[in-house]
Length: 208
Image (cartoon, rainbow, N blue to C red; front, side):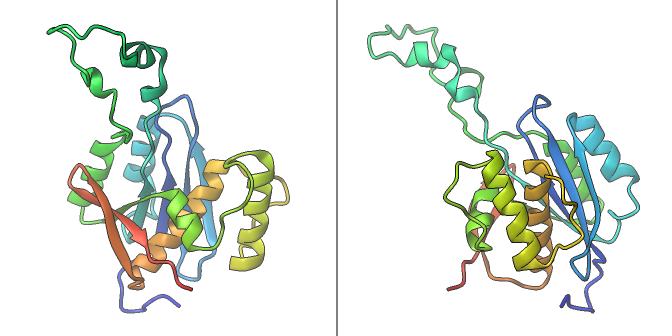
């Protein structure tokens, strides 16, 4: 049960994609861990609009996942990585931040939330899945993995109000992030994995 002395009435989880080519989702939970809202977005401007206009944001804690940048796998990088490629003085090995695995998408949004006095944390969805006992033996984000995750959230964590039809993978991940926002306010044990733009990415301690 949520600490009644806290000011947060809602807990918002954001499963953030690394670009507008993939869907991001937002989930809002109340103090009793009931789903208030699930929505899907593609563009950063739409995520900004949600946080600027949603009535749930003012008294909330927000957990936003860290998206991983897949540009490192582009053909241009593979070509420049060849060991027989001559490296001239005008070639920079990390030009355009190719070697960075972490996307800084929506950094301005996060900074604006913090400036408004809203509690914001960053998280890693894969770590949270392990921590909550929601990992599976299936390839991540495949249909069978999503089916298993949705059933686990219903049975293990009581999200019975979820529809029978399959939710998008990002929506299921947003629920997990919102659970972490709730637990963070409830003083769950965490540690810092790394920092992005000065904001620590927190790891939820796994309990045996």
